[in-house]
Length: 293
Image (cartoon, helix red, strand yellow):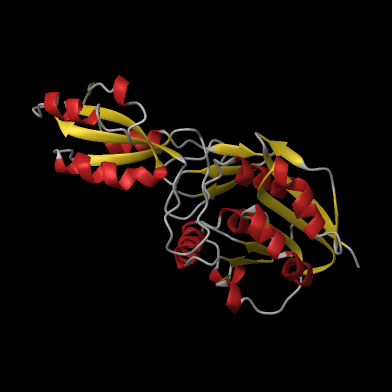
């Protein structure tokens, strides 16, 4: 049996509160999103945080929390200090609990994302095996899901693709399993490059079908399809680069932006791309367009 305290705090105060909790005897601190706010790593090595964060502080069963709670209730940086209480937490198989929370997901008609430790629900479908990890992208976020659904409906067989901002490689791998000829995976984070290579190996996809690059290493080329599931600001700044990387008539798929950012992103590409109506899911957007000649 354990005891758990649940604290709400702003991101800038979390490190200080974590140090205090550890000093007071907490055996572990877990950070959770308080408001279902996705965050993205913009710079390699950075640690993005949610604006409002939940800290779960775990204490042993025999820890006397009376004085700890009294001190924390006077800490102004704890947003829920007046409601703080200790909750009993039973022992459980933590690894199994985490694994049970990640279930197979279907995108479109035949594309599945499956955890590596489970058998796929439809063995004859296109099954991509991937585990959640440090690099962004296991299919659970709206932006990734929209891109995967688009890939399931698109004709990628025999085509050359670029996955720009590949993260875990989930989009690149899905395209390869859908019979793309080659998918060039690009990311500014070396951890993402490693994750993409590992996931390709896990899915028995030959390395030459998913070559990986840091942005400066990407050779000159023109792809049939370019996908970029990143953020609105880099999507805008990369408009001219993406236009050069696409063949005339090539398809562009952009995601990672919010509904309030649609007009600005489209405006950045107006010299090169004709866009279809945006696809929207929970305020997140997927834009698809065709490169003009």
